[in-house]
Amino acid sequence: MAPLEIIFITSALLAGTRAAGPQPLRVTTIKEEPYVMSKGSELEGFCIDLLSALSKKLDFKYDVHMVKDGRYGTTDDSGNWNGMIGEVVRGEADIAVAPLTLTAKREEAVDMTKPYMQTGISFILRKGLASEDSHFLSLLHIFSTEMWISVLVAYLLTSVCIFLVARISPCEWKQPEKEQNSFPLSHSFWYTVGALTLQGVGPHPKALSGRVITAIWWLFSLVLLACYFANLSSWLRSDNEQLSFKSFEDLANQNLIEYGTIKDSSTFTFFKNSNNPTYHRIYEHIKKAQSYSLSAEEGIRKAQKGNYAFIGESVFLDLAVARYCNLTRAPEIISMRGYSIAAPLGSPLIKNLSVAILRLSESGELDYLHSKWWVSSCLANNGKSSPLKPASLKGIFLILALGLGLGLFIALMELASKSRNIANTQQKSCCSVFSAELSQRFRGGEVTKPGSSDKNKA
Ligand code: GLU
Image (cartoon, rainbow, N blue to C red; front, side):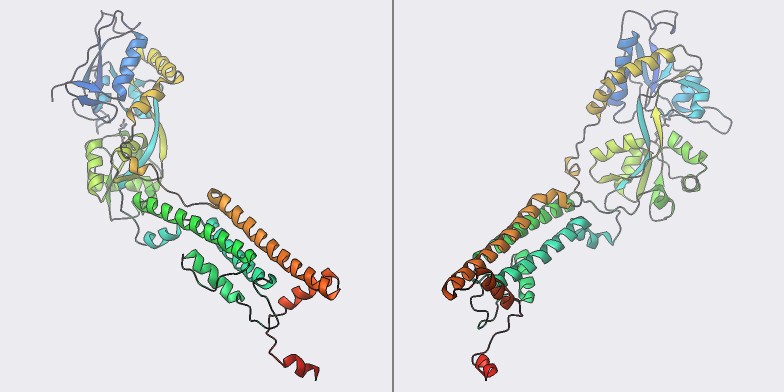
């Protein structure tokens, strides 16, 4: 491909640069989304905007060309550099402006500015490379453990309250000595389950106290079910499966999927030089299987096809995941590093460029550029659901608690009112009638069979 060029003509030269005249700086770069991309015959992207901002700040002009071998830069067996670093070392370019990682080895060969962006190393793979056992568990995963415990406690308390109210309330259980109570403990538990599954199971409470508790429990069940299904559907839509491969350790310990980095990249060099046994195993595997990608685009393409984990820099991988909805990034990020601009050793450019980068960062312009180029087109993925916690539904738990308290209070009032009537007619103390009534209702509710009291008397 013919090199793409951008020429900006400005008035003065950068102080201390190629002092021979107003010659533009030769800038080497590499095509990588969203740093450098073609738009017709021009270039655009984060690095192009950065270069333009730096040229305005430092007042220089420049020509951009693509690195000839399409590499970032590493040394061969005889110690010669390839890629953009090689071009800078050989004097074929004055600076390299690209997502070029600052490493110790590169810093020995060229001068590098302060980083303009931070990143780490992670990997992406196609969604759906998930463990088999996650499907069953995902149904329980909709609510957090605390939520499930809270629902269970709410269920037990409500069942017990319905049972108590049905015993206490004289409107529910008019004649404890003659009638069977219609809400034994077993029916109370069954009744609340019926409401929870939207299947009414009779008999229903007749007293106001019982109805208050029932109505509040129905409301609670409706809200709970609505939240469960809403969360379930967003869970399914976001395809939020448990990844089988969450870490580099998982990747190194399996033979099911292939994995690789960009050839001759700093990521590959990191695994090559690492003393960590897991990372070194990853390097050995990539080298043996020759499972490199020649470019970031190729890595993404392979990952999209499936059965390939593309290992790269997280800031780039996040963009890939935001653009291609079928990809997902592993949660593990290792080896934090930064992207810098490279210039030949001893270049007076470095100091000025570093200061300009820091100024752009401090004024928020780098943040603006980041937000400009890291736009997500994969909106469906943004609303990843997480298990619902009781705090999100504390309102409805509070209403249920108030309803249960109110129901019990009304039941006691109903009994108190009945006790007062009896106390008035029988000229007894209201409290003694109330406690006698209460104890009769909790004696076990055994029905006094007609005539049995006479027999006892006899
Ligand atoms: N930024 C890297 C470098 O400068 C290339 C990408 C990668 O390592 O994944 O070599």
